[in-house]
Length: 332
Image (cartoon, rainbow, N blue to C red; front, side, top):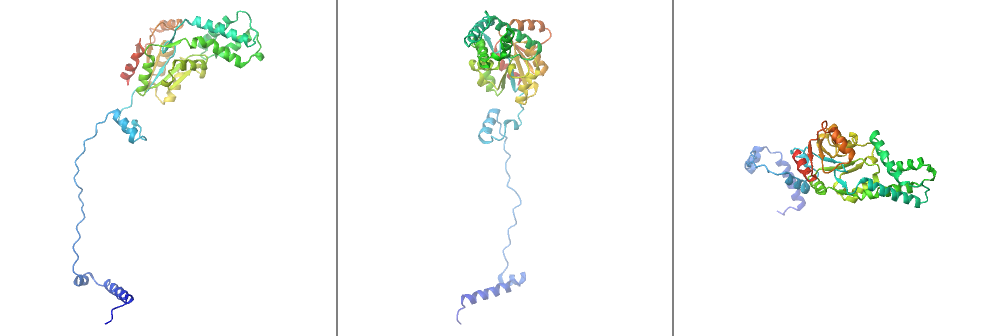
């Protein structure tokens, strides 16, 4: 017989496959034999020994978070959050002190400002400079009485008008420069207390937010003073009353820091030399308080502290700023 052509072979196999699909399992077994039984599926899982939990401290967790899980904050772990999250500091006679008497600094600045305004073409009365000093003192007294800051630029403008200098002839830039000159000796007269910079750096290294809040009637002068002392890199907030609506001891001034940090009052520490402006306000806020007794306070602060000593009690008293980090750490 002649061999089948490829087409004929394919047709034959197709008929065979069609007939094979019609066979019963028994007929297929007779023709082709029984198929080997399939192995039953494995239903049991291999035994795995229990693993010991990793004992990691906070530093190791922070390192893992930074390298592998930056999207997961450390607060998402089961560690208890620290109690103290921020420290609110006063400035004058808490963080820094004047190297010369304030009266001398004001007299020097007022004379320089007087000379500058005369040189700029302003016709001023004779011996005008003492009035600049008195205008500042008066505006500070009014600010304290009304609990609303009277700005230094406005005080000088009102003074000039009081002496008959028309407002229409005043150059705002000249007035602004005169105020800066008036405050220049005082601005450069501040010095940090011993250990102040180390204290700020130590608290910052612990992850504690730092705010500097002060009563001052010229914000640009205050901010330049902070830059002059070189502590701005340590601060999260740096405000004076001239830049906001409130003046210490108004607790709303302190609440600015709470809102910025999304913190509760008991999570912050208020530090200052004044029982009235700092400690009493901190107590009303609901914060921890530390009175800084670092030297001779200004006369008004000394008088207020003597009057309130039996009524207002801070949570702690320090005579050295270098003691503050350990105190805050103990409260954490």
